[in-house]
Length: 284
Ligand SMILES: [Zn+2]
Image 1: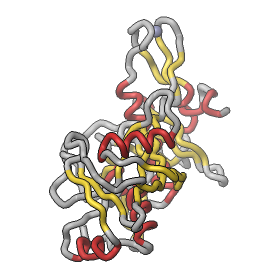
Image 2: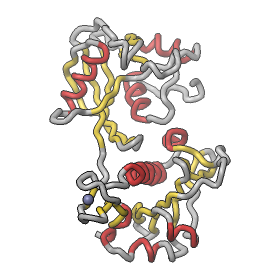
Image 3: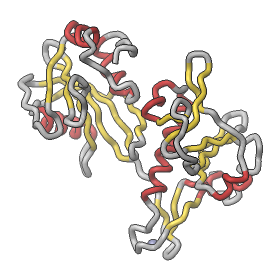
């Protein structure tokens, strides 16, 4: 694999055709193209040679993409420097993928500066895809933590929506949670729903997935059906839980009492799949 070539990054950082994605304090530079947003990529500069850099991949035409972590020059012009949460859903698949990969790797590098085995310092290797211990040379790889996110419907085809305590009043979404060691994805869906709202589910079916590098998750989406619709929110992770019909959701959106997360697009996809059509993004 090209990542293992120690000369790959140094040579790409000297090649003006290399496209650089610069991440500064969790933000990247974006530009508006027609009505869409795109990453503003640039050629390598002299300053990039001393920065944390990762090889993000290569197009069919040979264009190579490298991510670098830049230093914050001060307050960033926030209309152009945007976070993945803000723009992830507005970028093309390629750009969202580059941003999510860069964000995930940067998070990982930032929190794995020391060896978990001996405590010595580590340094990046293999074009930014591993860290190596300076003392015992052990290799450490970035991890991805699976999380499940699920639609729960009842026999009347109502959708379960719920609110976390740190969300503002009126913001509701589908349930989600991390997969525990030794657990299947389907078992995680059933456990999370039971723990958070006291509902037993069956018919757990896979729907789709989305990388979510905050800090390093893969959100795996499911549908499921409640065996009994009686709700008992745990009042810790979930402080409000309701069953809604499509008509009730429409009214909530109209009255401005419901905002689907604009960036966790899998949550939106799950809700819209049940709803049967897109929910107007202007109403947040
Ligand atoms: Zn070590």
